Length: 315
Image (cartoon, rainbow, N blue to C red; front, side, top):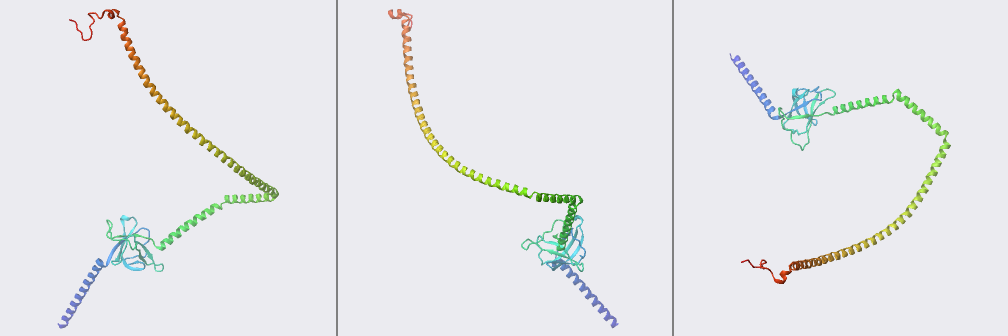
């Protein structure tokens, strides 16, 4: 009975220790998930994820800063694969960071490499709408860049080869052969007519000398003509100055004559007005005298009874 009791006590203690260890592990795992790491999402559209698995390291500048937590196909991102990475909370990830797959060429095991953004930039902590974690953009590795460059080089090489084939086609080869034959014929013709060509070259030289002498003569004539033109210009300028002085004098005389004519006109107008007034007065006097002379009886015997004087009335 004592042996069975000891076994029961030992079993109970073992179960209790295992339970406590399990609880401690679960608690530590939960605390690590909520405190020690920061989650980020990367959408890969161009790169292959061959060799990448859950738990693969996440590196920054060659130093492990986290692990790959999960990956899945993203329905809203076309053929993209969404990879969730857990990065140590103390590692700052700046805006502008880019992630790419870095693969070991010998083992083929892949890791997630992150090129961080500018150190003076803001932290990447904004969560886009519909996402659970901040999103790191997809970058490209050095191997991908080399592969792209090699691919472009191959394409350019293929284009060069195609153009060379087009250049060296049968038709172009015949044209080149004909051109070479024409050049040979032209060379033979030049050799055969070397003396004539020498004479032509000498004639060109003589004509060049004559042109040079004619140019010198023309230059001298231009110099003399320039002197004559300068003299004529000076004389013309003096004549223009004299003409301007005469015009100024004529303008002053015309202004004086205009003023005198205006004054004479005003005086004549005043005298004509006075004469007109005197003529009008004389005409009125003559009219009154004529009216009186038209009735002699009134002058001899005086006005009749019917002719009332000023202020008179009939009885």
